[in-house]
Every structure is written in C-alpha cells, then in structure tokens.
Length: 339
Image (cartoon, rainbow, N blue to C red; front, side, top):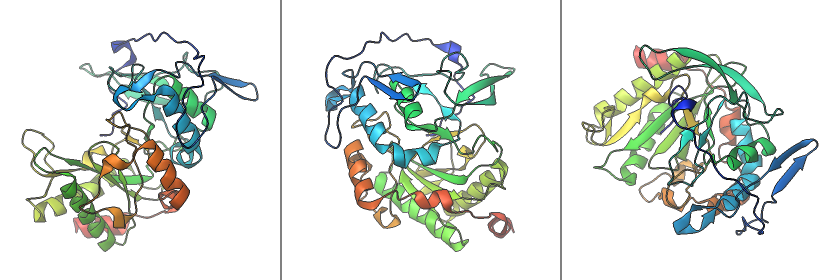
C-alpha cells in the first residue's frame, strides 16, 4: 500500500548499521556483472557497502544483487521517479528486518544530492507541521546511494517538485481481502479499465509487487489531488455498487469483503511503489508494468522477480512509457460521474 510521508518521524527509531566494504566479487546473478564497491561519476563518489549481506536469506539474494538490479533497471525506472519527492524507508537488515523512515536528509545525504523542501505533519495530537528536505532521485548514482542505505523500494509522490499540488495520475489501488484471491483482484482491475474506457480515458496496469494491483490513469498537471480523489471515489463507488460480491470501498479490514478499491490514496503526501520497484516481499517481487491482456484469472504476481522483469524489459521495453507521455483531462469525466 502507498505510504504516507507525514507519518513515522525520523526520531521514533534510530538504527545504526555497521558498514564494511565487501572484499568479495559479490552481487553476482544472471543478467549482469557484479556491482563494484565504489562508483564514481566525475567528482561524485558512492561507496557500496555490505554487498554480501543477505537481504532475502531464503532466496539467497544479497544486497549486492539488489544493487545490481537497480543499476541495470535504472534507464527504465528513472523517468518514472525523476523530480519526485522520494520516500526513504530503510531496511538495513533485509526485507524481514524492522524498517524505519528517514525523512529529512538535510545533514544526511551527500552535498551533491538533489533535495526538495516539503511540509510534513507529526503523528502527535495536536498535529504540528515542520519543513524538511526530502531526497529527489534523478540519476543512477543517486539511486544506488539510496539503495545502499537500505532502501529496498523506490517510493515516490504522484506529483513533481515544481508543482507539488498537481499530480500526474489518478491511482486505483486494488487490495484483496482475506476472503478473495488474486484472480478476483484481476477481475476488479478489468472493471476499473471498463469504467475508465467508457469515460474516454486510457489506463495502465501494474502489479503492486505485494498483494494487489495498481491502475494508473495519467492526467494533465492541471488537476488537484481533490479532483483525482473525487474521480477515483466515484468510479470505485459505481463498481462496488454494481458488483457487491466482488468489489468494496470499505476501508476497515474487519468489515471488508472482496477487493478494496482504495480511492483514499489520491492525496498529497502519499507515495507509491514505482514501476520496477522491488518490494519487501518473499522472492523479492517487483512492481511490474503489464499489458492489459495479461490481466486475467491466471495472472500470478509472484513470477515477477528482478530477473524476470529485466528479461521483460529486453523483450517488450517499458510497458508504462505511455503513462509518461499521455496527458488527459478529467473535467468531462467528473461531470459525467457526478451528474
């Protein structure tokens, strides 16, 4: 599920990771050479540490393997996360270890690292707001520095730093309850596509990399987060109202039955695991862009591992490239839905 950048302040938990440079040629896996322990780009230097540390012990996947994947996938990934606030959630002990957020990188990231100033809220009541500097990952070196700190995932905002109030897409976050399987989640994704198609809008599906599916509707940067949430809410209600045995808008897990169409994720400060982001899940599964004709009852998100995704990129290219260039207006669709 997308994470809220306003939660879990840095001072809740401080984890110190003992770092060392591996002396072994690690990070070796099919599809590419191992990553070196030091990477230079002009005057910028990133030292990669603990390359032999097991991040997925059962699968024998190391931190070096994770770095190698992100190095190789960077040309496809970076256009999707460039110029967006990056949510830095660190897993220094691997995917099963206790993660923690690092929000403010003012005195943490290297001086050359791009930053954006944002306002975040505390969890305490009454809420207090503070201004922090968040990282912006715009090139391969920045991406590898981020992964080296223990960031398994590439989580970013839906908007970019020049217009933080204007998202680039509407997201339909489809989250199956315990009483249904992934086949039902695929059915609901197709219902979302059908509804969006009827409104004359294009959509792009991807696995979340975890338990659900995401459907993105790219839009012009003229709409507010309120606009996107209204749109997603109306579509979700329409589907849940006509497919009561399959879809729901009930947020409470205790009361929920079926597949949740979560419109609430359309809000400033929320973030999403980008396409090509690895997730802290068994098998190191990846949030993978799909053809719509792949979304059916046989869809199995567990097959989309790092190596599988790199192979798909070689065969198909970036299936979400269209999401970067498709610009759509929601005005007519909103009037139709709310009329």
